[in-house]
Amino acid sequence: MIKRSKSLTALLDKVVNIPVIQITILVILFILVSMFSLSAQTPRRDSGADGPSPLHIGDTIPESLWSTPLQVVNHPDGKKVISLNDYKGRLIILDFWATWCSPCVAALPKLQKLQAAFSNQIAIVPVTFQKEQIVNSFIKNNEIGKKLNFLLVTGDTLLSRAFPHQLLSHLVWIDKKGILRATTWSEYANAANISTVLEGKVLNWTMKNDMLQFNKDMPLLTATENGAPKPSNIYYTMFSGHLNGVNPTVGTSSDSITKSVRKYFINIGLVNLCVIAWGKPIPELSAKQYVYPNATKNIYVRPEAVYSEDWNRENTYCYEAVMTENTSSADFNDMLAQDLKRYFGIAGCLNRTNMQCLVIRSTKSARNNNKVGIKLSDLIWNFNNTIFSVPLIVDETNDPTKLVSSSIMQCKDLISLHKSLEDEGYACTLEDRKIETFTIHKTR
Image (cartoon, rainbow, N blue to C red; front, side):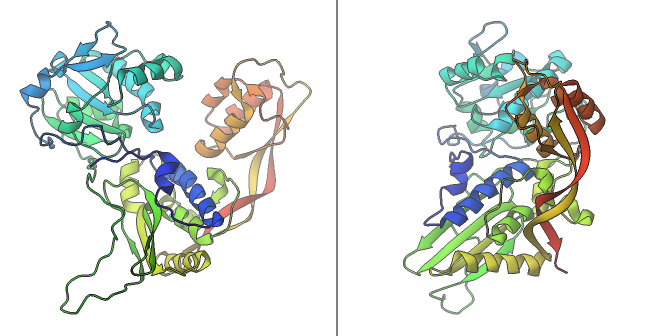
């Protein structure tokens, strides 16, 4: 059973009668999930989950699959139909994606470069259940789509049956001998890993194995047979570890028979849980405005060198609370806060922290004639959320919509950024500022 769930809808689809403040917290949680963990997308119900028995790691691809015609668009030679037979003897990487899956779309340029780099040694084949018309519109109108020059399989049902999955992106690795070697997220697609497969080496990878039948509406904790009658009412709070193959999600449901309410948080990081426990509105903060104990920062934020799936399995958790129906939001937040202290020894709060910042101001020489480029506000957002070698940027230009050269996005350190901004006519200074932050601190 494959369920479609898009971004914010997926987070809020089971929220029932939640006060405004709690909806605000859940919106913040959506932003944090996007910020601190890999964004998994869920395919549509019609993406081909039902059908023949799926193939497993180590299986040989059956001849019927090799010869099956596949509808394609954007083929370099103008072909409308291909088959996997066209690429037999190469390493084939099937990339299951969708136009609405932003991480999938963002990965396409990287995959295209890898295809060019390895040439006829590999065949990277993006596959989507979406119809030709939708994909052609994506190629025509999307900035990434416009730059793609390799084929895209459309309207797929068969490949999704052979390689079933619940979450996107989903890569299927078929080696030169036609053996299924791996299923992974798209982040595994890099030159080193491709070379490893081409050389026939053992793969010490964490394989992607989605739970196709997970039902988030069922409690994580259930009563067992112990000889005594099952209690009529069971109230509890609980933590568990990461559930492999399940999309991060949160929700609330009510039971009119037992007069209880259940709140669940599945595969959520500690930072997100601390925000929920704080229980008060917080402003939109950048990634650099979340402060952690230095000695244990890696349990809150994934290091760049660690694969997302590996980090998520070790550092995200499930939390469930079944309470009486009259339990207030404040009481629930207090329960969660106490459990975070009890089991992890942490708490989070909003405060003001002294931080060294890069302050940007306009000067008389600031350029006013840029007709193309990137908005200054978007440039600052990118640096404040993704480039951690540069201090938090504070904008005091009073002109956030002004266009600046998009080449500044290539800067990866303070020196190059400082020079590029000065070339645009901005004054940049390092200054200590009291900045609003959400701080995680140890309680023991």
